Image 1 (tube, rainbow, N blue to C red):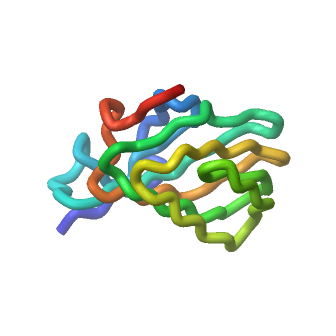
Image 2 (image 1 turned 135 degrees about the vertical axis):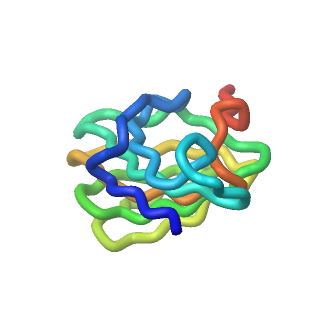
Length: 117
């Protein structure tokens, strides 16, 4: 059985600029097909616009509010919103308030699968 406590995970910054605490991923569990992390972006901050060749992502907003842009379409997002980011789509999150959200990637997140303009 694999159980990981969020508060025991060490934060790091991804290539897109968000702060991540991996909950279950290739680095800390025997995952094969997905990964789960908590991401935070400070108010006024944003991720660098990017895309993933392989990974489809789900974001689930736990705290805060912001705007999500996917392939040129922008929407306001907030607590309780779930966002689908298909593989191959450009995307960027901008925080209007401190944002905290869960990020699930399938296949698991890898820095090498993050591409920029």
